[in-house]
Length: 455
Image (cartoon, rainbow, N blue to C red; front, top):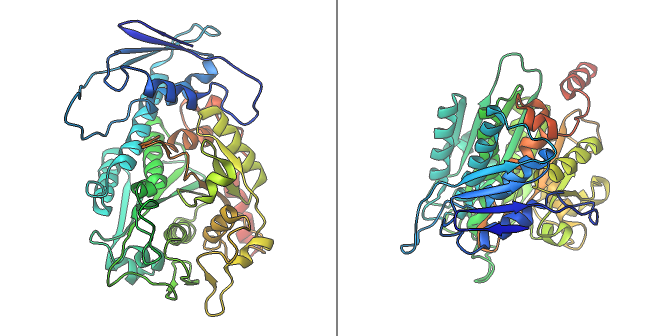
């Protein structure tokens, strides 16, 4: 329900039991209503009042944040105004704490940051620009920053990122932000696909298929925003944001079909589709998370496949993982945050053969595009995290394909930060996040230590 006067909008959420797979407060619908409500785009209303249950404050705040994008180069009818958001919780009249307000403000900032990066065109958001943005955020947070770029990538063995981005004017890069608090017992790596523009390379996209490919950096944008907010709100474990940044361009130096690249995992990949580039850069990213960061939990997030929209639709990202309990946690976190996900088939024994090559360890694109293509694309990334799918591994791997939820119409949604902050909310010092976070499986770090001891 929406009530409007000249000074504010009152937004109340109705609940339904019709769907098991939708966020209870319907935050996606809320952001749509707010975004396209007359006057919102011109900031005519200085106050938004939200009526909801206490447990839904975070998801409702996410919905409101999405309704106010920051990027625009319009030259007319542009105004700037501060908007105050008020929460009314009939089931718990106690006011939000200062920490709660800090978390909501930080989360809103992270969502709008992610949306801003995705909304910007390539001539304003290049590989260099995203690296500079990430480095500034890292320095402002006081965390360690590592950047490997250009020819350094080739020298250090990052054949995936380098091979994809070597033809672009702005050099490719691996940018890593590392938060390492005292007393941490677990190491978590969030790896984001940052393709700043995707022409498809020599497997070039069509004139109607290419517009909008500025959004192919949505995974890295979401990871960067989530990392910033997680550290600002207090994160008790080691946390790394691994941004795999490149532009998939066409030029004399570009990769071509039949090339073979050696990725950071040491595995060889025969290129049979230069438009299947995101999995190449993330293959390097997850391998770095395992080899250099010694991560216990690796999550990659990306706008990976058009098949994601066919598989789980426009509102739910696809989640693929080697751990059933973490799969359940991801689904619950999506329902609590509004960044909804739904599981897809995890069966490497029947799907990974799609990448069979006669001259390399694997190809980069499937032979049969009708055989669980969304799952297969994720499995390619996982192949560079694990030595062998058929040997047990103590590492938890979570793959999130959010190709369709990354935008609504021509605007970015800032998808990702809300999901990650909720999924890993038990590691936050914020009670607002920890209260809505799912109960996580047993200590993964101790499992990995035991596994390595046995090996």
